[in-house]
Image (cartoon, rainbow, N blue to C red; front, side, top):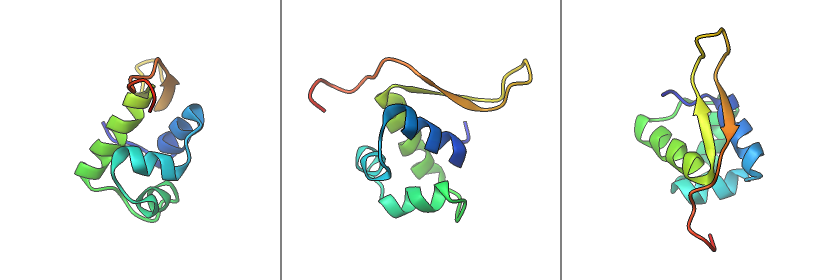
Length: 85
C-alpha cells in the first residue's frame, strides 16, 4: 500500500497524535513526517513501512481505493499498543 500525505495527517488526527509522537513511534525524524505531509518529498519504502506499521499498531486501518468508487482513507480500530505506552 502507498501511504498518502493526507492519510497520514488524517490517521494522526484520529489517534490525536502529533508529528513528534508518530516520529517517536515509527523511529523516524519529525522533519521526515512534516516534509511528507506538506508534499515536500516522497517517502523511502522503508520509511513508509515504518509509518504504516506505527499507525496500524496505534489503531488506525489505512484504506486503499475502494471498489465502490471510494478513495483512500482511514478508519479507527482498536489499538494494539501494549498497556502503558
